[in-house]
Image: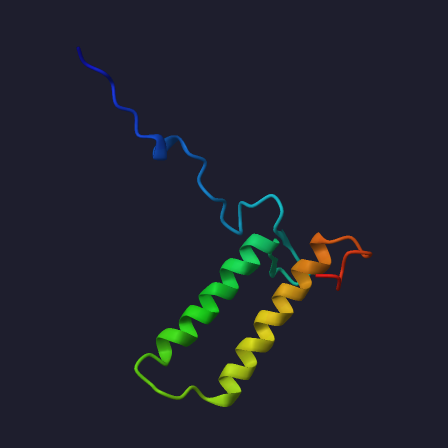
Length: 92
């Protein structure tokens, strides 16, 4: 007896890029306004870059750390504002 093996990963929907995403859109200046999953991906890339660029160092520049923390909080705040109703904001 034999069976055909089907690779399920090839049938899985592939994640959309920022250019093909239905939720991301272009601003008036031509820049891409990302949906929140893509904003989180971009944030993760920026944080990952900071960590890799300071790899092996014991200290991270205070301004770099403060800038990235401000970036993280801003992204999370904008996502919260989009996803929660006004009466739910600030309650979690």
